Image (cartoon, rainbow, N blue to C red; front, side, top):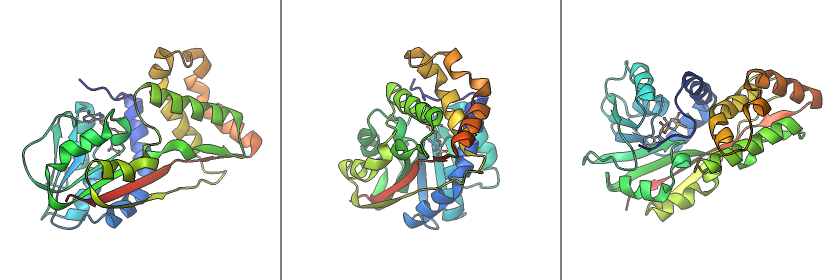
Length: 267
Ligand SMILES: C[S@@+](CC[C@H](N)C(=O)[O-])C[C@H]1O[C@@H](n2cnc3c(N)ncnc32)[C@H](O)[C@@H]1O
């Protein structure tokens, strides 16, 4: 059974909800630019709480169809209730590295899923055969390489470095956004294009400290298991408040990661 480094407890589900709200607008812009259009049949890999499946469901309309795939039944329960008003959106519980339903799709999409795959090119190749010739291949992912504080804040930058190390220790690729176009091309996708969107926060924006603290919380078991930090070091219960206070003391903002979109067509 594949494992997702951040788990699926209530705190991680709440983190994914907050993250999805934060990247809803960049996601909408990237999906529209990618060529997803009315009437398409679309596969959404690693659908999670169903945000992308629903956004794509709105774009393809009732004449299209969306199938969201995720390995985690807790995530899918939320995804099903989120999409209750979209009867042309449905979900399948399966491992995307293995699953195929033998059907032909107009497009395959996925947000923040290749990040967690040991072999992202292999996963893309596996699903490329489900896309009709000329169909769209559209992936969105983070490049966390740009995540930092400005001006530099020690606690924030230590946490960022810990997050990068923990993701890598768990087998994820936290900078996959920087190579997303290359990953698609290596899988055999043609005419690959794309762009990244940065969302800057103002110093008084309250979302930065809780977002970074929530990633640390979800990755804490990985950090502890790999000896990167102890529960005492992390002091998770007070972390959001300590981080907010520390950022205030240096007048710093957290600069969030880029959300990158890459898209092309099956030959
Ligand atoms: C970071 S979440 C992204 C969810 C959603 N795509 C979004 O952008 O909000 C990654 C999702 O991939 C799922 N996942 C991880 N490995 C998987 C696998 N091998 N097969 C299917 N789903 C997987 C996890 O359960 C989780 O829901």
